[in-house]
Length: 135
Image 1 (cartoon, rainbow, N blue to C red):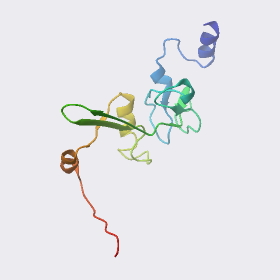
Image 2: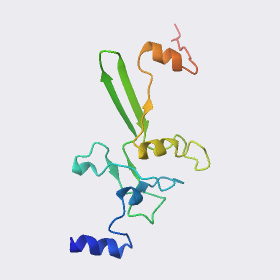
Image 3: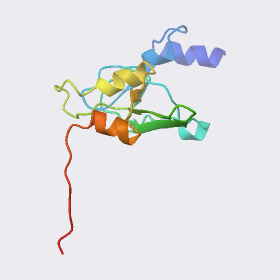
Image 4: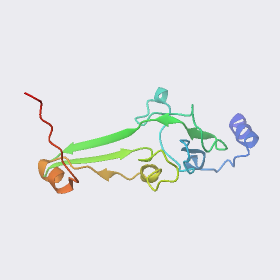
């Protein structure tokens, strides 16, 4: 415990700091959004790494990469339910409104409803393109 407290003091981090204030998104232009997970060696389902972070380097654990897409599907009596999340933003452009949209959801432990059944897919379809092989 003494070593842990000494380590935190050396990094100027309060002993009561929440992990989410130090383990944050580290992709280009990312605000310091706290994200859950841990190294794959710990058996964590959301594997992440602190290598290659380029933003929020003043935090103890800026996340450089890890799980990109997480999906959970349940087959129940009513219908299949699919939830998904992209753990980083939909755009790599830090000025885009979609640069950290999914990261914010992920940090708040929220999911996106994912169309799964043919009816849900038809309802949510934005466009469709039919490709045919040349004969």
